[in-house]
Length: 93
Image 1: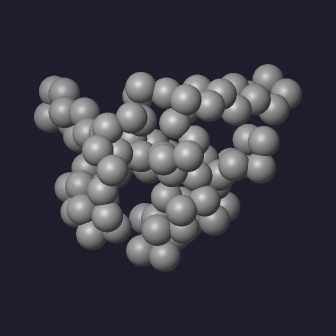
Image 2: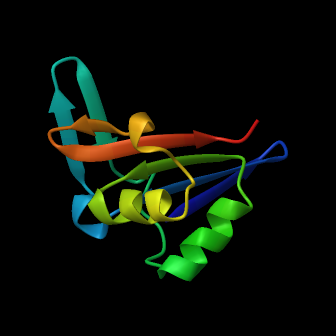
């Protein structure tokens, strides 16, 4: 997980550790799971604390998405799959 703070906004980028460094591509969709996501390895509680205080989120991977769904941070209908790997974004309005 990596946290970005800019201009009053807080973005949490999180991905399953085994996806860091991969590029996912399906048709015209391409997602690089690189340095943008590479940060601290955290447990579920630390992740949830950051996301609950965020204004935006960018999430990739089965484990990460499962936590988000389980805690109703995102909806299944908002999950996109690229090469079978789930990806979702969160915006707090």
